[in-house]
Image (cartoon, rainbow over all chains, first blue to last red; front, side, top):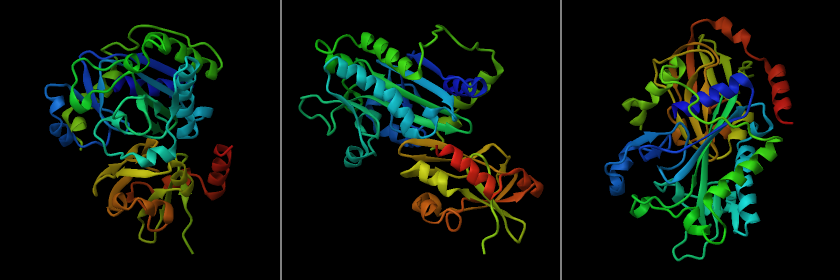
Length: 244
Length: 128
């Protein structure tokens, strides 16, 4: 979370669109910014799992078999003016790629979102505006298909931060309500390899930005960076985690 | 007649009252842009706020947005009913939809904020 916030600060300072892609070690559950910590104690599947809290809203996400992204851009960017514009850009690129592969993917519209209860604990049980869903003919599928990408925004002065989780596959260690099918289970064999989907999704996103993504791998900040350290101290603290 | 308001570029409004307290809220333009509101976090009475820094958060179905203090000072009142009745922000953003009241550290800070004309110009530029 600290690194995502630092990315947002860098985007504001530089005026550039910045994106980071990451995995999790150890596998972790992230809570939405406004979820009550006490709710985690009502989820037996979470016993023993590390838990963090995001600065953005939404439900809890099980990380470890997903690709997590964070994209930050100046508020003056065309995609930064309205929340739905950035969702449309990032999620729309994934829908485009999946449809190109013959997968019935779409973004949840406001009408569908209103029909699904938004108080579910887990993010992938909710249906929010812009979520990417794949229509799957499986018994028990929630209205609106199987959700594979959910994102949330934090709008700060001068910069917009959007981060999200793309479910690549069902997490092997999560059970019960916390277990959700990912791309591998939903489209594997017909829609192709999830890794290839990711590569082409990012290419489509880059095309929407008007140019290739300049890639830089590895850690962007060192552990002794004072700005990052300050942010880490905030997000790692119990006061933040248990703020609700 | 309502007293004149000043505005921060982050769309909070501020109004100096007769008793020297500054009432702060969210502009109608910003409330409309937020769309469906679901949660709000406000500071406690007695908290110190600093101009340009976050004093609270508001969540809509699409995003969490920080609320920024237009001036520095001490929070002397919080609209405690607001989080349970968020529609008030849209129904009456400059009246019953007020968010906090600040005892200003320097009332002159109000002059650094946008007047109505300048704010209308800002909104006009963001709308295109």
